[in-house]
Length: 95
Image (cartoon, rainbow, N blue to C red):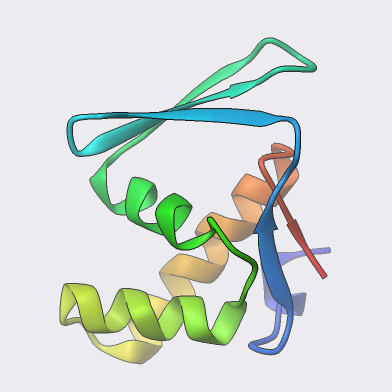
């Protein structure tokens, strides 16, 4: 599913086979099935933290726009593209 097919009502959650650790303002995620590591910058780590519990894509975008004081429309586009990439890499599920 392309990023354009992700709507605000869809629930976003972490995949179960991930282990994460905070490293300063960043995060490192290990996919225990593949052995791949992913390093997230501060903003991406903030999204990962919000995914500790399942959250709707719309609520996730809203929280990120509030936290970073950016235009909600621009923020939504960036967050949706990022979570689509995370989904494609198997880090999260969207449904």
